[in-house]
Amino acid sequence: MQYWQSALETEGWYPPYRDALKDVDAELANWRPEGVAANTIWETVVHVSYFKERLLRRLQGKPDSPLPGGNDDTFVVVGQQEADWQEAVAKLFDIHRELYQLLKELDESDLDKPMPETAIGAQFFDLIAHDAYHTGQIILIRKLTGSWPERRSFL
Image 1 (cartoon, rainbow, N blue to C red):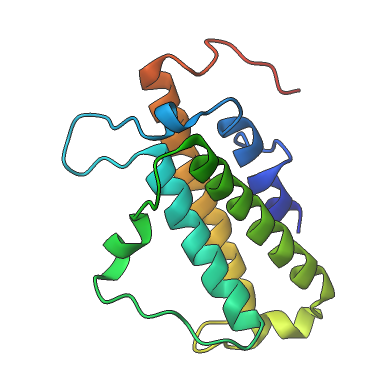
Image 2 (image 1 turned 45 degrees about the horizontal axis):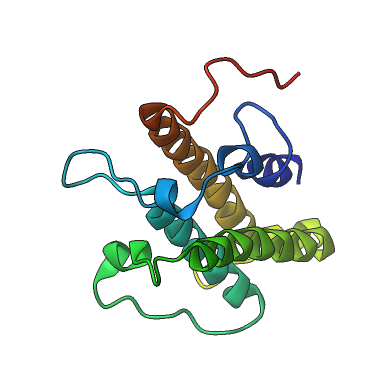
């Protein structure tokens, strides 16, 4: 559970989303580095939220949402306004917190249960690694735009 919280709000080996997204507005969230394969911060937040929501739906006994276009469909941003951006960030935090509450309610034996094929615990660990990867991308974009502190203290 420690690593789950580290991804969202508690500084661990890398800054949490709370810090990575602090003071990011819609304009910065939409900035794209040069290159076809580069995603924006906003696209990344939507992508991360999709996979968290997929696990939440599974834990709630709901079916997965089909992705006709595959993984690329998880980066699609709806809206362009500041309110849309704030809603996307709030969704990321809300889903993460909901999953945390469900994780706290699980017995250790529940973590080994497949859902549908992969064990629940493994899916949580996959999302933790996924969070670390994408948090790094967000911070790199912020560094490229000059919106990340040159020096920051977290101890």
